[in-house]
Length: 364
Image 1: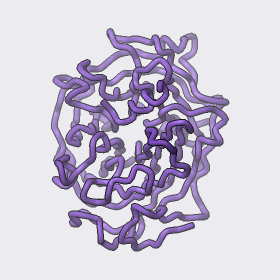
Image 2 (image 1 turned 45 degrees about the vertical axis):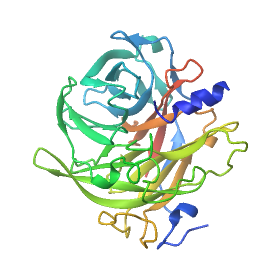
Image 3 (image 1 turned 120 degrees about the vertical axis):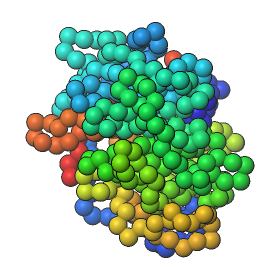
């Protein structure tokens, strides 16, 4: 079960130094000045009805999103216990007015197909991040392990990518429970694949649910027919601005990444504090000057330069109440040439939460 299922349960009941020896207790370096401008398209999200079904499955738990070559959308399902791990193919349109079903269709008709990931269930693959190869193969990140696997367009397992040992979960090192690879993005040229742990590895920082958290951006380089792990760079997740009181559920983590053409990344951070709700923010991430820490077993006590980040959008000014947004992909260009970003929320298969699909205009 994903750590963020705790949201459903809860609903029911200035710059830091560039060189830092303990960034988990300070804010991340910030840049001011030129940055992408993001603005909401339309007045709010398209909501996929809780009753939508396709291929015998209820549509929900959407944790990652990618746009296919034919203009349809692939949405990866978060773990749904013993049911088959799967990807849904969806049809919806993005325009200056926001997100809408295809012409003549209703939101219930957006799901087109379910693609089971052969041999896996929600207990063996906790799908969180997804990227598409130009030829249609699906790269899928799972928090279990963590792991990254490549599947054919029909859902057949093709290969598993090697994962550096320091990420692998043990009692003393690696990812903490349900805080593994939450993101996955392929560079526009296809030569680099990026992922990251959601919050700090055990050996990198003490557990602190409200403080800033140093995670490792892991870059894979293409080699032959696959990818091999390469550089690692520290990205500092923001601390919770207003921690809750009384021991209620609260967490903030790096939920998704999106590679930009100039080599920078967009990072989606997602926060939940019981009694205060969700906070969703997007940052631009620059790796210029950041230290490659791939040869560093533990970040504690070390000095390094983390990636720099700039806040470029806060859903607090979106005009609607965001749900558990955790997937992000490029959409079609608008008539004026502006790229679009499309985001999706994971409803945790709970009727009190929503599957929201929302689009933003991106101006560089």
